[in-house]
Length: 289
Length: 266
Image (cartoon, rainbow over all chains, first blue to last red; front, side, top):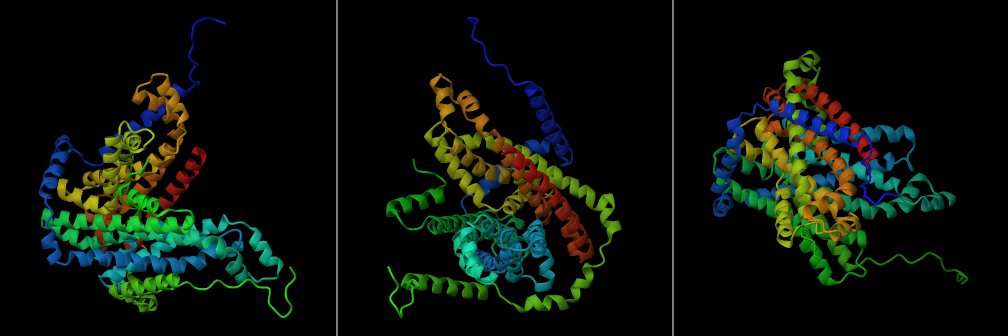
């Protein structure tokens, strides 16, 4: 043994691999920037432009947007998200039972899984674009778009939670001669319903943001307000709409996260202060130590 | 215990509690109210099929769709937006996530401020950012990439800071005990254990960005959505449908590749 301290040698090829990755990232960056027709003065000017607008946004003109009914529009977004979630939940639940590999035969499972995948691949906005000529402009187009899109994700999540259940109760129902439907009702449903309903709430949180966006193309909700203020470069009003939206989104996230936690962990062994502390940390994103 | 004769052995069904009933009633009432507000109209489901508009969706003009100038070039632009914003957003997310985790935050104020700011940034929907950026710095892919960079940063810090929260604090303590300053201690004590998750989350964010950048064009922020919007305004739904098919196939392929890569990483 020598007296010199020796560092362990780096694994062979690590250096080369690191350089290759760095090179790939740099090439990808150069390639992408080349397509964005960015000139140097645009690049340097962008933060200044953004800052100029940000300064005009303070203070937000709450009184003016309130007169125009922006608060009602924000709530319309919430209604759209809620009904969209209800539609998605009701339609996806039976389909999920037909898509899970432990309870459904292969001939029905594969097409339904592909249906979920197909729906998930089409963004809500594109669905709304297709639906608007059929339903006309307004909240119903957005609701349908969100409802249809929710079927995809909710169905996938519900399928996954059905697939991860304990098979004991299924065997128990089968051994008593239960049919498929009673098997689902008494063996599968009680096991998965708490998880699935918390997924529904989670999807509702996502849908509130999505429905706010849908208004931008005229499918109802607060997005149209933001667009019209920005088009007229009325930045104080636009920022008031933004603040309202963010407030509602954060409130709904907080309530929904608290309810989800209650559904999953139950009410046992939780004191009142710890629950409000958890709600506070959901709202601010700051965890208590 | 033997069952008493003449009495069923079934357990008694729990009684409905007043609270359960009132919550159910309130939710139903809210649903009915909301349905009226959004103009819930089930007739759409069957009237949809007799709509004369469907003829406009068919047949798909494949020669128009595959003509390189029409769809391919905007599509490449979509990818460029998604790529640059993933790289920038995830690159920025690395230090911010470390500031946002109570395990690795340099000090309490940094932790509080970064968490609060990122929470608000995440509450703004992605296309709102796009519209804001389009207004601020002009129509085009440049604004779109800014918006998606902010959006990916917000998503990535959420995902990755939670990974850092759950990392094993042992190596970090060892590095600090050996006298390491903050940054080197993180570099050697935490980064190696969480790096596979970082790459996996980045791939996921790239997936999200591809999906998001498809629709950016609807608000004027570049990419394939610009063509979609234009064709929609001309009522060329056959072309829209053709583009949707292409988008569907490409998004699906990317998802499959990314999912299999992520499975290998974790």
